[in-house]
Length: 268
Length: 268
Image 1 (tube, rainbow over the protein chains, first blue to last red):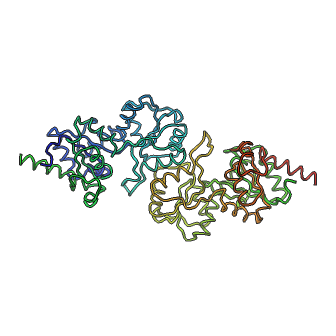
Image 2: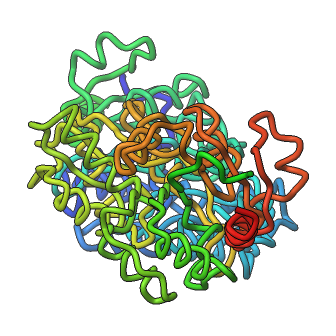
């Protein structure tokens, strides 16, 4: 029984639930089925440039009903991290406005001027301007320590592969001599702990499902969870079979979880 | 006689002739005096985000009459470099529009799409947007070799120290794995040769005047020219006196050249 002793589901978003603005076939039905059975679900994503509120809305548009507490973006977890480890810190951001909104929502104090910031949080900024890049430069140059939501070099954008957070980081690191102090995103233990805390479960009772071996599967393996790779995003079956962090299961998509769920119920 | 055997003057712009939009006291009068005596002058600047036409206009606004042929910006010299070393290359740019205009003026072929570019020229982009950063990322990712007009990390902007070319380079290098192949700007021999070619003189007959030890004085020393550091920009007298590349002369500003010129004429 594949799902035996699994009491919580940690599900990636981009490439697992949706691709861009499109739902992935069967994702909605699977999540509906888990929710209907009151099986605990959290969505764990390395995206740091949107807020939970924006994410709830995005999921709503493809018919998925999620509560904010079920969503753990790197913007969310960066906020939690700062509140815990640097509660007094004034924070400057380089990233789309969703990051700032989420940090504020998490109770983080945002700096009024770059020069007064203790921390600089960097995420993807799809609306980057020189002026904003310059403000972040000034924050780091004045001593703000860099926290990165993730370090991805590129992501599949609407019209092709696009420059990601590593570009924003590269600009600041190359000009200020500051290094990145913490990377919040998967496969970090920070993200694993955030998910486990939200679920209230121990790792061996959780299944991580995602399309990335380097972030989703690696996170699950390191934290002692069971893992399922879906092939609806950036990985192929060969990637999964040859990975050092070999997933416990390889599924075409999240819909395979629904099939498995129904099969086990029938045979129960 | 300080100016004996000096037949040509290589003069830096930012910090030597002007600061931002303001003329430096005495710069206009000194340049007027050189031009009136038909002493050959070229302006040699690491600025790559404006064209010669823009520079002529900028000098005109502070009363300095310069011909385009007297102006060697890194945008100009990058154009000359490409025409000589990669005449067939299709070129993409990351920088303000002045770079593109100057390259076109120099006869460089600009690529229509980032993916088809053979070279990516990077300079300061004070109007940077995510979309332009992304296009440059795609050019480099598709194999375009990176040429940098210069590698400065920051410059004194209107409202404080501001992020310079190294930021734009850092974003692309960190995400594409490409390295910078050539840096055109001072203190390179490329810039020294461009100035000597424009003046039609051998190096020992030239005097380089500028406010930067690392670019102006170093260029002159390496190329076998005489050098004068002016204190109207980024350097102090102590910088000059303690520099490994010690300038032959240290002047408060370019106006000291006019004083010297008139003194030597009187005593002649």
